[in-house]
Length: 401
Image 1 (cartoon, rainbow, N blue to C red):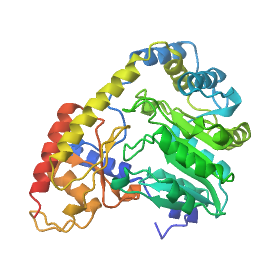
Image 2 (cartoon, rainbow, N blue to C red; image 1 turned 120 degrees about the vertical axis):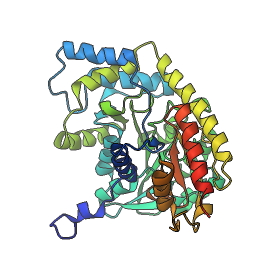
Image 3 (cartoon, rainbow, N blue to C red; image 1 turned 90 degrees about the horizontal axis):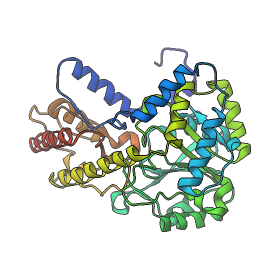
Protein backbone atom coordinates (compact mmCIF):
# COMPACT_ATOMS: atom_id res chain seq x y z
CA UNK A 1 0.00 0.00 0.00
CA UNK A 2 2.94 2.33 0.68
CA UNK A 3 3.85 2.22 -3.02
CA UNK A 4 0.57 3.75 -4.18
CA UNK A 5 -0.48 7.42 -4.14
CA UNK A 6 -3.17 7.03 -1.48
CA UNK A 7 -4.37 9.91 0.68
CA UNK A 8 -3.13 10.15 4.23
CA UNK A 9 -6.78 9.73 5.23
CA UNK A 10 -6.95 6.31 3.61
CA UNK A 11 -3.57 5.31 5.03
CA UNK A 12 -4.60 6.23 8.56
CA UNK A 13 -7.54 3.83 8.72
CA UNK A 14 -7.39 0.22 9.93
CA UNK A 15 -9.42 -2.61 8.45
CA UNK A 16 -12.24 -4.00 10.61
CA UNK A 17 -10.93 -7.05 12.50
CA UNK A 18 -14.40 -8.62 12.55
CA UNK A 19 -14.51 -8.69 8.77
CA UNK A 20 -10.90 -9.85 8.56
CA UNK A 21 -11.86 -12.89 10.63
CA UNK A 22 -14.96 -13.38 8.48
CA UNK A 23 -12.79 -13.44 5.35
CA UNK A 24 -10.45 -16.07 6.83
CA UNK A 25 -13.45 -18.11 7.99
CA UNK A 26 -14.94 -17.98 4.50
CA UNK A 27 -11.67 -19.24 3.01
CA UNK A 28 -11.59 -22.25 5.36
CA UNK A 29 -15.25 -23.04 4.70
CA UNK A 30 -14.50 -23.00 0.97
CA UNK A 31 -11.97 -25.74 1.65
CA UNK A 32 -14.74 -27.87 3.13
CA UNK A 33 -13.81 -27.30 6.77
CA UNK A 34 -16.69 -27.20 9.27
CA UNK A 35 -16.35 -23.81 10.98
CA UNK A 36 -18.57 -22.71 13.85
CA UNK A 37 -18.77 -18.92 13.80
CA UNK A 38 -18.82 -17.05 17.09
CA UNK A 39 -17.37 -13.96 15.44
CA UNK A 40 -19.86 -11.83 13.53
CA UNK A 41 -22.24 -9.43 15.24
CA UNK A 42 -25.36 -10.46 13.37
CA UNK A 43 -28.55 -12.15 14.58
CA UNK A 44 -28.88 -15.65 13.15
CA UNK A 45 -32.66 -15.27 12.90
CA UNK A 46 -34.47 -14.48 9.67
CA UNK A 47 -36.24 -11.16 9.33
CA UNK A 48 -39.79 -11.62 10.72
CA UNK A 49 -42.36 -12.56 8.08
CA UNK A 50 -44.60 -9.53 8.65
CA UNK A 51 -41.69 -7.23 7.80
CA UNK A 52 -40.79 -9.22 4.68
CA UNK A 53 -44.43 -9.04 3.60
CA UNK A 54 -44.33 -5.25 3.96
CA UNK A 55 -41.27 -5.14 1.69
CA UNK A 56 -43.09 -7.23 -0.93
CA UNK A 57 -46.03 -4.83 -0.82
CA UNK A 58 -43.64 -1.92 -1.28
CA UNK A 59 -42.23 -3.54 -4.41
CA UNK A 60 -45.73 -4.08 -5.79
CA UNK A 61 -46.61 -0.47 -4.95
CA UNK A 62 -43.60 0.70 -6.98
CA UNK A 63 -41.45 2.12 -4.21
CA UNK A 64 -38.55 2.05 -6.63
CA UNK A 65 -37.64 5.72 -6.99
CA UNK A 66 -35.18 7.87 -5.09
CA UNK A 67 -36.40 8.63 -1.60
CA UNK A 68 -35.90 12.00 0.12
CA UNK A 69 -32.34 12.36 1.44
CA UNK A 70 -33.33 12.07 5.14
CA UNK A 71 -35.69 9.17 4.43
CA UNK A 72 -39.42 8.87 3.80
CA UNK A 73 -41.55 11.10 6.02
CA UNK A 74 -43.67 8.06 7.01
CA UNK A 75 -40.62 6.26 8.41
CA UNK A 76 -39.34 9.36 10.20
CA UNK A 77 -42.78 9.75 11.81
CA UNK A 78 -42.70 6.06 12.75
CA UNK A 79 -39.34 6.59 14.46
CA UNK A 80 -40.78 9.55 16.38
CA UNK A 81 -43.72 7.41 17.53
CA UNK A 82 -41.33 4.64 18.58
CA UNK A 83 -39.25 7.11 20.62
CA UNK A 84 -42.37 8.41 22.35
CA UNK A 85 -43.89 4.97 22.93
CA UNK A 86 -40.80 3.11 24.08
CA UNK A 87 -38.54 5.84 25.43
CA UNK A 88 -40.92 8.63 26.48
CA UNK A 89 -39.00 11.07 24.27
CA UNK A 90 -40.59 13.78 22.11
CA UNK A 91 -39.00 14.26 18.67
CA UNK A 92 -40.19 15.81 15.41
CA UNK A 93 -39.57 14.29 11.97
CA UNK A 94 -37.09 17.04 11.04
CA UNK A 95 -34.88 15.76 13.86
CA UNK A 96 -34.70 12.26 12.37
CA UNK A 97 -32.28 11.23 9.61
CA UNK A 98 -32.64 7.73 8.15
CA UNK A 99 -29.28 6.32 7.07
CA UNK A 100 -27.76 3.43 5.15
CA UNK A 101 -27.28 1.32 8.26
CA UNK A 102 -26.41 2.37 11.81
CA UNK A 103 -22.74 2.74 10.91
CA UNK A 104 -23.51 5.66 8.59
CA UNK A 105 -25.52 7.36 11.32
CA UNK A 106 -22.51 7.26 13.65
CA UNK A 107 -20.00 8.34 11.04
CA UNK A 108 -22.02 11.25 9.64
CA UNK A 109 -22.74 12.57 13.12
CA UNK A 110 -19.02 12.61 13.88
CA UNK A 111 -18.31 14.27 10.52
CA UNK A 112 -20.90 16.95 11.26
CA UNK A 113 -19.63 17.68 14.77
CA UNK A 114 -15.88 17.16 14.96
CA UNK A 115 -13.16 19.41 13.58
CA UNK A 116 -9.45 18.73 13.20
CA UNK A 117 -7.76 18.25 16.57
CA UNK A 118 -10.95 18.11 18.62
CA UNK A 119 -11.14 15.22 21.07
CA UNK A 120 -13.77 12.49 21.21
CA UNK A 121 -13.90 10.37 24.35
CA UNK A 122 -14.26 6.64 23.70
CA UNK A 123 -14.54 4.17 26.60
CA UNK A 124 -12.67 0.93 26.06
CA UNK A 125 -13.51 -1.71 25.01
CA UNK A 126 -15.16 0.02 22.06
CA UNK A 127 -16.80 -0.95 18.81
CA UNK A 128 -13.95 -1.17 16.32
CA UNK A 129 -15.16 1.61 14.01
CA UNK A 130 -15.49 4.44 16.55
CA UNK A 131 -11.83 5.57 16.62
CA UNK A 132 -11.46 5.10 12.87
CA UNK A 133 -14.47 7.34 12.25
CA UNK A 134 -13.01 10.01 14.53
CA UNK A 135 -9.73 9.82 12.62
CA UNK A 136 -11.65 10.12 9.36
CA UNK A 137 -13.01 13.44 10.66
CA UNK A 138 -9.43 14.43 11.63
CA UNK A 139 -10.42 14.39 15.28
CA UNK A 140 -8.44 12.82 18.11
CA UNK A 141 -9.80 9.69 19.82
CA UNK A 142 -9.18 9.74 23.58
CA UNK A 143 -9.67 6.42 25.32
CA UNK A 144 -11.07 5.88 28.81
CA UNK A 145 -9.91 2.43 29.86
CA UNK A 146 -12.18 0.04 31.73
CA UNK A 147 -11.66 -3.52 32.92
CA UNK A 148 -13.71 -6.60 33.63
CA UNK A 149 -13.55 -5.74 37.35
CA UNK A 150 -15.68 -2.62 36.74
CA UNK A 151 -17.96 -4.50 34.34
CA UNK A 152 -16.40 -2.52 31.48
CA UNK A 153 -18.23 0.69 32.49
CA UNK A 154 -16.61 4.06 33.06
CA UNK A 155 -16.97 5.86 36.38
CA UNK A 156 -17.91 9.52 36.84
CA UNK A 157 -14.40 10.15 38.14
CA UNK A 158 -12.84 8.72 34.98
CA UNK A 159 -15.13 10.82 32.81
CA UNK A 160 -14.33 14.02 34.72
CA UNK A 161 -10.59 13.41 34.44
CA UNK A 162 -10.79 12.74 30.70
CA UNK A 163 -12.61 15.95 29.73
CA UNK A 164 -10.41 18.80 28.51
CA UNK A 165 -10.99 22.10 26.71
CA UNK A 166 -10.55 20.18 23.45
CA UNK A 167 -13.26 17.59 24.23
CA UNK A 168 -16.08 17.81 21.69
CA UNK A 169 -17.99 14.58 22.30
CA UNK A 170 -18.21 11.21 23.99
CA UNK A 171 -19.47 7.99 22.40
CA UNK A 172 -21.37 5.69 24.75
CA UNK A 173 -22.72 2.31 23.65
CA UNK A 174 -25.25 0.57 25.90
CA UNK A 175 -25.99 -2.33 25.60
CA UNK A 176 -22.38 -2.64 24.55
CA UNK A 177 -20.56 -4.20 21.66
CA UNK A 178 -18.24 -5.99 22.48
CA UNK A 179 -18.87 -6.56 26.19
CA UNK A 180 -22.63 -6.86 26.58
CA UNK A 181 -22.48 -4.45 29.53
CA UNK A 182 -25.51 -2.25 30.20
CA UNK A 183 -25.50 1.03 32.12
CA UNK A 184 -28.18 1.30 34.79
CA UNK A 185 -30.28 4.42 35.40
CA UNK A 186 -28.20 5.35 38.46
CA UNK A 187 -24.92 4.86 36.58
CA UNK A 188 -26.10 7.06 33.73
CA UNK A 189 -27.37 9.70 36.14
CA UNK A 190 -23.93 9.89 37.75
CA UNK A 191 -22.34 10.37 34.32
CA UNK A 192 -25.01 12.92 33.40
CA UNK A 193 -24.12 15.02 36.43
CA UNK A 194 -20.54 15.24 35.18
CA UNK A 195 -21.62 16.11 31.65
CA UNK A 196 -23.93 18.85 32.92
CA UNK A 197 -20.81 20.66 34.14
CA UNK A 198 -19.28 20.56 30.66
CA UNK A 199 -21.81 22.05 28.21
CA UNK A 200 -19.38 21.85 25.27
CA UNK A 201 -19.46 18.03 25.24
CA UNK A 202 -21.94 16.28 22.97
CA UNK A 203 -23.10 12.72 23.66
CA UNK A 204 -23.35 10.14 20.89
CA UNK A 205 -25.58 7.45 22.40
CA UNK A 206 -25.30 4.25 20.37
CA UNK A 207 -28.45 2.27 21.21
CA UNK A 208 -28.48 -0.23 18.35
CA UNK A 209 -28.81 -3.15 20.83
CA UNK A 210 -31.66 -1.49 22.72
CA UNK A 211 -34.09 -4.37 22.23
CA UNK A 212 -31.59 -7.08 23.22
CA UNK A 213 -31.60 -6.30 26.92
CA UNK A 214 -31.84 -8.74 29.84
CA UNK A 215 -32.31 -6.31 32.73
CA UNK A 216 -35.63 -4.67 31.92
CA UNK A 217 -36.26 -1.15 30.66
CA UNK A 218 -33.71 0.38 28.31
CA UNK A 219 -31.91 3.36 29.85
CA UNK A 220 -30.37 6.24 27.91
CA UNK A 221 -28.64 9.53 28.65
CA UNK A 222 -31.33 11.14 26.49
CA UNK A 223 -33.80 10.82 29.38
CA UNK A 224 -32.04 13.59 31.32
CA UNK A 225 -33.66 16.86 30.31
CA UNK A 226 -30.57 18.97 30.99
CA UNK A 227 -28.64 16.96 28.38
CA UNK A 228 -31.40 16.57 25.79
CA UNK A 229 -30.06 19.23 23.43
CA UNK A 230 -26.64 17.56 23.37
CA UNK A 231 -27.60 13.90 22.97
CA UNK A 232 -27.65 12.25 19.56
CA UNK A 233 -29.45 8.88 19.61
CA UNK A 234 -28.00 6.39 17.12
CA UNK A 235 -30.14 3.36 16.39
CA UNK A 236 -31.67 1.20 13.67
CA UNK A 237 -33.47 -2.03 12.85
CA UNK A 238 -30.45 -4.27 12.29
CA UNK A 239 -30.16 -6.06 15.62
CA UNK A 240 -33.57 -5.99 17.28
CA UNK A 241 -35.48 -6.89 14.11
CA UNK A 242 -32.83 -9.14 12.50
CA UNK A 243 -32.53 -6.77 9.52
CA UNK A 244 -28.75 -6.34 9.16
CA UNK A 245 -28.74 -6.67 5.37
CA UNK A 246 -31.60 -4.22 4.88
CA UNK A 247 -29.20 -1.39 5.86
CA UNK A 248 -31.54 0.94 7.71
CA UNK A 249 -30.24 2.99 10.62
CA UNK A 250 -31.27 6.36 11.93
CA UNK A 251 -30.31 9.19 14.24
CA UNK A 252 -32.36 11.52 16.40
CA UNK A 253 -30.64 14.84 17.03
CA UNK A 254 -31.18 18.55 17.63
CA UNK A 255 -32.74 20.02 14.47
CA UNK A 256 -29.66 22.10 13.58
CA UNK A 257 -27.42 19.02 13.71
CA UNK A 258 -29.88 16.83 11.83
CA UNK A 259 -29.90 19.48 9.09
CA UNK A 260 -26.09 19.35 8.84
CA UNK A 261 -26.10 15.54 8.72
CA UNK A 262 -28.74 15.71 6.00
CA UNK A 263 -26.44 17.93 3.94
CA UNK A 264 -23.56 15.49 4.32
CA UNK A 265 -25.75 12.52 3.44
CA UNK A 266 -27.06 14.35 0.38
CA UNK A 267 -23.53 14.50 -0.99
CA UNK A 268 -22.44 11.00 0.06
CA UNK A 269 -25.31 8.62 -0.64
CA UNK A 270 -28.68 10.41 -0.74
CA UNK A 271 -31.60 8.51 0.80
CA UNK A 272 -31.45 4.83 1.79
CA UNK A 273 -33.06 1.96 -0.13
CA UNK A 274 -36.74 2.74 -0.70
CA UNK A 275 -38.06 -0.81 -0.18
CA UNK A 276 -35.96 -1.32 2.96
CA UNK A 277 -37.39 1.90 4.40
CA UNK A 278 -40.96 0.66 3.95
CA UNK A 279 -39.99 -2.60 5.66
CA UNK A 280 -38.48 -0.66 8.57
CA UNK A 281 -41.59 1.51 8.80
CA UNK A 282 -43.69 -1.62 9.24
CA UNK A 283 -41.23 -3.00 11.81
CA UNK A 284 -41.90 0.02 14.01
CA UNK A 285 -45.62 0.48 13.37
CA UNK A 286 -47.04 -3.06 13.25
CA UNK A 287 -48.98 -3.87 16.41
CA UNK A 288 -47.39 -7.33 16.48
CA UNK A 289 -43.97 -6.89 18.11
CA UNK A 290 -43.86 -10.46 19.43
CA UNK A 291 -40.92 -11.49 17.23
CA UNK A 292 -38.68 -8.91 18.92
CA UNK A 293 -39.43 -10.39 22.33
CA UNK A 294 -39.06 -13.96 21.08
CA UNK A 295 -35.59 -13.20 19.74
CA UNK A 296 -34.64 -11.41 22.96
CA UNK A 297 -35.70 -14.41 25.02
CA UNK A 298 -33.69 -16.75 22.77
CA UNK A 299 -30.61 -14.56 23.18
CA UNK A 300 -31.10 -14.53 26.95
CA UNK A 301 -31.20 -18.34 27.05
CA UNK A 302 -28.02 -18.42 24.99
CA UNK A 303 -26.42 -15.86 27.30
CA UNK A 304 -27.09 -18.16 30.26
CA UNK A 305 -25.68 -21.13 28.34
CA UNK A 306 -22.53 -19.26 27.28
CA UNK A 307 -21.86 -18.05 30.82
CA UNK A 308 -21.96 -21.66 32.06
CA UNK A 309 -19.70 -22.87 29.24
CA UNK A 310 -17.12 -20.10 29.75
CA UNK A 311 -17.07 -20.75 33.50
CA UNK A 312 -16.11 -24.36 32.69
CA UNK A 313 -12.87 -23.22 30.99
CA UNK A 314 -10.38 -22.41 33.78
CA UNK A 315 -8.23 -19.93 31.82
CA UNK A 316 -11.11 -17.65 30.78
CA UNK A 317 -12.62 -14.99 33.05
CA UNK A 318 -15.82 -13.24 32.00
CA UNK A 319 -18.46 -10.89 33.33
CA UNK A 320 -22.16 -11.68 32.91
CA UNK A 321 -23.46 -9.74 29.90
CA UNK A 322 -26.72 -7.87 30.47
CA UNK A 323 -27.46 -7.13 26.82
CA UNK A 324 -26.43 -7.58 23.17
CA UNK A 325 -25.19 -11.05 22.17
CA UNK A 326 -21.51 -11.10 23.08
CA UNK A 327 -19.35 -12.37 25.88
CA UNK A 328 -15.91 -10.84 26.28
CA UNK A 329 -13.68 -13.06 28.44
CA UNK A 330 -10.20 -12.18 29.58
CA UNK A 331 -7.84 -14.69 27.99
CA UNK A 332 -4.32 -13.51 28.93
CA UNK A 333 -3.66 -16.62 31.05
CA UNK A 334 -3.04 -18.42 27.75
CA UNK A 335 -0.42 -15.95 26.52
CA UNK A 336 3.03 -17.53 26.57
CA UNK A 337 1.68 -21.06 26.12
CA UNK A 338 2.78 -23.29 23.27
CA UNK A 339 0.76 -25.20 20.69
CA UNK A 340 1.20 -28.87 19.87
CA UNK A 341 3.32 -27.95 16.83
CA UNK A 342 5.59 -25.67 18.85
CA UNK A 343 4.12 -22.21 18.15
CA UNK A 344 3.96 -19.81 21.08
CA UNK A 345 0.73 -17.86 21.67
CA UNK A 346 1.87 -14.29 22.32
CA UNK A 347 -1.40 -12.36 22.18
CA UNK A 348 -5.17 -12.49 21.62
CA UNK A 349 -4.79 -12.22 17.85
CA UNK A 350 -2.69 -15.38 17.76
CA UNK A 351 -5.06 -17.09 20.18
CA UNK A 352 -8.07 -16.30 17.99
CA UNK A 353 -6.24 -17.61 14.92
CA UNK A 354 -5.25 -20.76 16.83
CA UNK A 355 -8.89 -21.38 17.78
CA UNK A 356 -9.90 -20.91 14.13
CA UNK A 357 -7.24 -23.20 12.69
CA UNK A 358 -7.25 -25.91 15.37
CA UNK A 359 -10.71 -25.81 16.98
CA UNK A 360 -12.37 -24.54 13.78
CA UNK A 361 -14.23 -21.90 15.79
CA UNK A 362 -14.21 -18.27 14.66
CA UNK A 363 -13.87 -15.61 17.38
CA UNK A 364 -12.45 -12.07 17.31
CA UNK A 365 -9.42 -10.87 19.26
CA UNK A 366 -10.02 -7.94 21.60
CA UNK A 367 -7.12 -5.99 20.09
CA UNK A 368 -9.32 -4.20 17.56
CA UNK A 369 -11.72 -3.28 20.37
CA UNK A 370 -8.99 -1.61 22.40
CA UNK A 371 -8.73 -4.54 24.85
CA UNK A 372 -5.78 -6.77 23.86
CA UNK A 373 -6.16 -9.15 26.83
CA UNK A 374 -9.67 -10.22 25.78
CA UNK A 375 -11.46 -12.11 23.06
CA UNK A 376 -14.99 -11.54 21.75
CA UNK A 377 -17.37 -14.43 21.30
CA UNK A 378 -20.80 -13.89 19.73
CA UNK A 379 -23.67 -16.13 20.76
CA UNK A 380 -25.80 -15.18 17.77
CA UNK A 381 -25.86 -18.83 16.83
CA UNK A 382 -27.91 -21.92 17.70
CA UNK A 383 -27.58 -23.49 21.15
CA UNK A 384 -26.34 -26.65 19.45
CA UNK A 385 -23.56 -24.79 17.63
CA UNK A 386 -22.67 -22.79 20.74
CA UNK A 387 -22.34 -25.95 22.82
CA UNK A 388 -20.23 -27.71 20.19
CA UNK A 389 -18.15 -24.56 19.62
CA UNK A 390 -17.22 -24.23 23.27
CA UNK A 391 -16.47 -27.96 23.48
CA UNK A 392 -13.95 -27.47 20.68
CA UNK A 393 -12.55 -24.33 22.29
CA UNK A 394 -12.06 -26.06 25.63
CA UNK A 395 -10.34 -29.02 23.99
CA UNK A 396 -8.01 -26.78 21.96
CA UNK A 397 -7.09 -24.66 24.97
CA UNK A 398 -6.44 -27.79 27.03
CA UNK A 399 -3.89 -28.83 24.44
CA UNK A 400 -1.78 -25.71 25.03
CA UNK A 401 1.14 -26.16 27.40
